[in-house]
Amino acid sequence: MTNNDTPRIIIAIDGYSSSGKSSMAKALAASLGYNYVDTGAMYRAVTLYAMRHGMISHDGQPDTGAIVAALPEITIEFRRVADGAQHTFLNGEDVENAIRHLDVSNNVSPVAAIPEVRRDLVKKQQAYGIDKGIVMDGRDIGTTVFPAAELKIFVNASAQTRAQRRVKELIEKGIPASYEEVLANVVHRDHIDETRAESPLRRADDAIDLDNSTMTIDEQNRWLIERYNDCIARLK
Image (cartoon, rainbow, N blue to C red):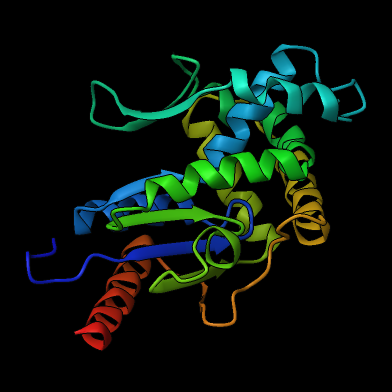
């Protein structure tokens, strides 16, 4: 927990899909008393809306025009629910579980690659950071959303490790998942994220690398707190 004399900063955590960004960002925000924003959930919510309204074809091609036209009708909020967890709400509906299903995962990267979608959500994300004291994770936080963030972390792990983690997470939520299917999705999303024209996934020049392939959650959380303390020491 920070004290009143400690400067509030923006912490940007970027990296590949299923690398554990969201879990570490949530834990870090909780320990610092900061707000947390899961930008991946925002893109998943738009994708879920598009799927429900027939804006994605059977072969996975998004109807870009229809999705862009629908953006003013889409509201995304983060709210605390009864158990204290933060859930994603799409137009007032709790969609936290729905957006985590593999069918959404299989469609989110093409939707997130639409320039107008990215620009719309980036504006919303930047508004969250006006007062600082925020931890935000995604693909382009340190490069596009908050290029001046005081602390930037870039997370990676092998595709196999990330797929194993994703399968475990889905099964724990009661969502059926096969390792082979999830691994194929991880590799496919990596390719789309790295090669899209608008805000591709890349490491910011001033980001600190974190390969958490062999780290425990406790080790990872301690590492993050150390990097935060180092950053605050430099600012004081």
